[in-house]
Image (tube, rainbow, N blue to C red):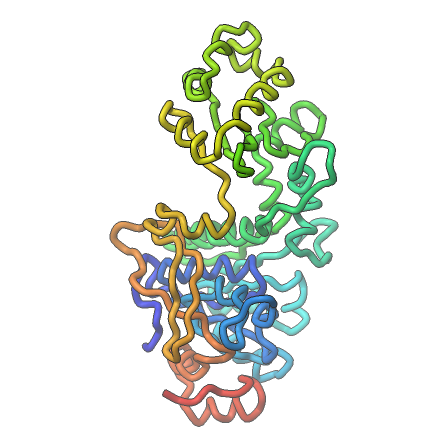
Amino acid sequence: MTERNATGALAGLRVLDLTQFLSGPFCTMILGDLGADVIKVETPDGDLTRTLPPHFVGDDSAYYLHVNRNKRGIVVDLKHPDGRDLLASLMRKSDVVVENFRPGVLEKLGIRYEDVAAEAPGVVWCSITGFGATGPYRDRPAYDMVVQALSGAMSLTGEPGERPVRLGIPVGDLAAGMYGTIGILAALRERETSGRGQRIDVSMLDSLVSLLSYQGAYALRSGEPPQAQGRAHDSIPTYRAFACADGKDVAVTANTERMWTGMCTALGLEELLDDPRFTTNRERFAHRDDLVPILDARFRELPAAVAAERLRAHGVPAAAVNDVIEAVNDEHVRAREMVLTLAAADGRSIEVLGNPIRLERTARTEHAYPPRLGENAREVLYDVLGIDGDEAERLAASGVLGSLAPAG
């Protein structure tokens, strides 16, 4: 075989990727980062994110490139009968199929999990959708912000009393991609015992509701919706961000009594330690409207970096609030290889974010540049289905494969 993904914990695992945009490609990228041979199947028009502005390397957008590394690419026209047959054959030869079509779309094309599983009972099929395979919202279209709105997460974001704000990262897409990966790995582990695959149903809305965490528990217990969190924390008044003298903010997480003492000492506010209003977190919470202005005034006298350094020196976790450029250039982020450079053979290159999973013995050693549209059609057809050059040319001439990349 000529597959490129030959190292990593999942080496030898074949994943057929029928996804686009973010939730599905993020899931399959994680699997590829861990060594799986990921084959990205696109329509002749390609993944819609290939043309998403504003940033491009050649013809492909930075959006597409950031989430499609370590994959091989093939075009299959699902409107063509031969294309549907070809896709079904690829599914039967794969360990995992990941798709993020709306429920029922593949079935309308005559492609059903039950039919594939009847011939390949070991296949693990993961469907990632906005709302899942069941429920009253099943057939609704969904994107990340719609899910953020429905989940309640958007209501928690922004300043108290102001309008809800979308989270700055597409957390609904990303959570669904991660949960999809977890589900796939669990199903593969179970397959070792049963010999059978199964279908996995992952919903973006389910995923984001699960991430409400203690805020969801608070709402269920009290019957009252938590309000926008802004810079603060619902339970700990000294777990918040403060504006500093240089216009930057510092994030402070003084969430224990020892850290409260450290915070007061670092800020030269030792007198607060003897104030009965602030003796324990319960008192500080009850009198937070008295406490926060005192802390605000002190932080406005200090640059953010100085405040953070003083707090850390007294055992209080703290950091100046980075913008994204500062974050991706942070010395620790770089030391942890959380920024990767992907390079194509023709000289194209791009920096993308790395994978946070560190495997001691079976880490992937190289990362492949994302494929051009249909770039690996010949090798995929040969590796997976044993289709020779003449048959590949016939399929290409019929329009099933789009334009077939040159041999070699």
